[in-house]
Length: 435
Image 1 (cartoon, rainbow, N blue to C red):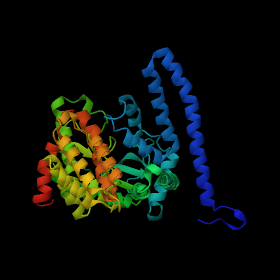
Image 2 (image 1 turned 60 degrees about the vertical axis):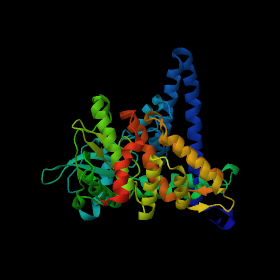
Image 3 (image 1 turned 120 degrees about the horizontal axis):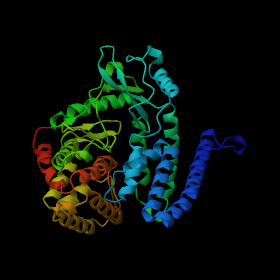
Image 4 (image 1 turned 135 degrees about the horizontal axis):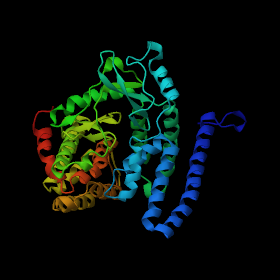
């Protein structure tokens, strides 16, 4: 972007610079207040109290910084196997406990969604939503037929705020790509893809279509419930769907162990079915988009962050997991190379194959309680960076769907065998009819 006559910068650049300064200043101010208080609490009440204060202030900071930062916190909050449980407890508040829209804001949101086509088909909305996220609030409503519905209404002004902060992330990625450790790594491509996917969550017309596709795809998985969309009552800024009563984030915690294990198996099977059979993948199944009912059902909501794999990459993804589950390390390494977006001219493919095969064989021999997808993925990505093999960005999002849900699955069933649960779904995806 070029400067204007007289050396003046374009307004967008000035606005972005101002936003970057505010983000930095807000972070410094929150840290300046939080650190002394945490130190005092540590001295008075112990280390846990001090850390809890820091975690609470970090969560508050993400809320202050806006939707793009909240999205990052949502993913981090699912990683109980790599982050302290107390931090995850605080970050879990980001899932559906954001500050709700005021009645005036919800009225403006409804006017923006339905103003040109007349009043909303469900009439007005109650003053307080049943759930409040970073992009939208969800209200209980009633159709003229008397059917109860859930109304997901986009926040006023969220698109402008999201685009601004994603521009900051893109700028940060461009700077990071110039550093020595990341030279040759497609940082900007990956971040650009992620930003495009996040912006896609603002298109509620697209999300409604994705939710309908997901409902159809997961109908083949027992005990999985995706709400029906009322397309005739929805708009590009508002999704009207089947109302599912009694959804609470802590339902599973009070259920007996056998039911918790059933939840884990059903949720993991649903992810595998998307990855290996249909190729249409919900990439954001964090608590708040994933619920459990006391009748034993897994409820999947919010399909705004979904991608469709090409049939080629779906099969390669499935073949990789099948070979990993059977300990065929060299074939896994070959698939990584075959699916790569780019292989550097100086790539050491033989060394990569040997190290990748060793990783797969070591992981295959681990007991279920000791196998970690996040640890496996981290080591695999490290090998790819070291030996000059760059993963296709199309595969980053499906892998993210597994990494996001892994913490939830392990919390429900610490002994679950991720590779064993995958086997029957892999067989359907590779050798059976796609449903």
